[in-house]
Image (cartoon, chains in turn yellow, purple, brown, orange):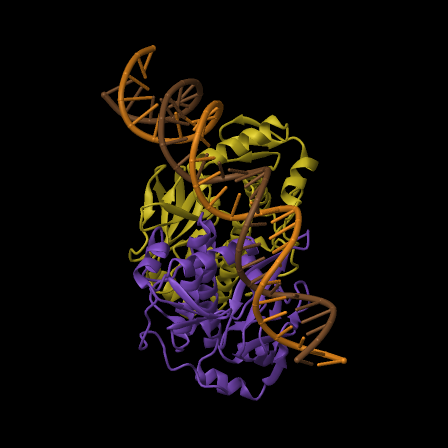
Length: 252
Length: 252
DNA sequence: GCTGACAATTGATTAGGATCAATTGTTCGA
DNA sequence: TCGAACAATTGATCCTAATCAATTGTCAGC
């Protein structure tokens, strides 16, 4: 299986301020190398096409997935058929871990995706043998909770520019902890996905990107790749009312 | 210790729609009765005055708390000194459970509070003896995650009325799962707390309550107690674009 | 009961985003 | 390569909530 990302925190070029505290980002990955190895035999590799729905909210969850490459969105569908995106998930993120055995979110691939598929039955038996696994689940949950709290905080921002800036900061940060380059921010998702994640209209998203570009704060190669050129102004947009970093991770 | 709330789900008068799936609300309580009993000797009972800060974000977390009576708010302070309230916690809620050993949020009593105080050292040793405890932590985390996701969803609502209605629905629901009456909704927190929780101005909060009253949807005894009199209209305000319920609880 | 500090409401104005509508840009399969 | 379906942008208008400002209401301590 793919080796755990070597960057376990204070890697080379993490420009992005850590909004959630010390980058204990291994938590994002459910398993460490040893456990991955132990589960390797049980896992199969699966592929999904771009746009493919991996599972639907309310469905029986019969397997958990561990993304190898690609990006996925997790969302809930409201009564009026509008969507609320709860998270974007990237390589080595885990999803489908269910408590009750049902999916709380729908999951859809927004790029082609390769992933390890772990049947819950196998996972369950592994749980009985390996008590340390529970600890990793706890870490993963704490990580998700922290992420979701940060998401909620972004959603409280009044201005479109503020939301978009914080979103870019988030993507940059996630690239950093994945050990990827951070000069160019990769936006695999559609503008409408961003809108649904940030609770704003597509038009507002578009205009916010336009503003950032016009003001010379960012420069975009194409729709999906963008670079922050005026860092200090950018930081001001974000940091204006950004949350003060917490040292650790806590439930509540 | 106080016995676990008898209502473990399908109690008598849960009018409120469950926005998060099956009411597996025991998860809110970290410990079951047996475990409470086992920890009883280690716990001390502590009291906090209204307005008292129980601990501050970034502080070392040397104890976890289990609320007996009273209400508490968890919040983060932004750089510009503005506050973002992440959660309101009620009786039998747990807080202060930390992974890294540091608090991620500040906690302040918004009413007089009585709570069990569990030193982390005692808790830690208990963890070694009792493997089932980890499972309860997982349940608690899943519960918190679900709550926070719902909070994020509320924050995406465009209209003040929608946010306030969903907030009232949430309070009503929480009263129901705590086994309290649900005809009158108790609002222990200040308007400014609600504003900080919902990402809106105090004035907007005030006007939204005014609107609901004027339209005859709610009736308020006093600042802190309010009753929903026109249920169908109320449900329409909420359900307009409310999220469809999920059957279970899942991470992502 | 008074009084001062704080909480909540109410009013007027304004700024920002939602919405509607139309255009341009992109992608992918025939 | 072309064209159709979808994605993104741009423009104009409307509407809501933020903001500023002033008033009223509430409560704790004297």
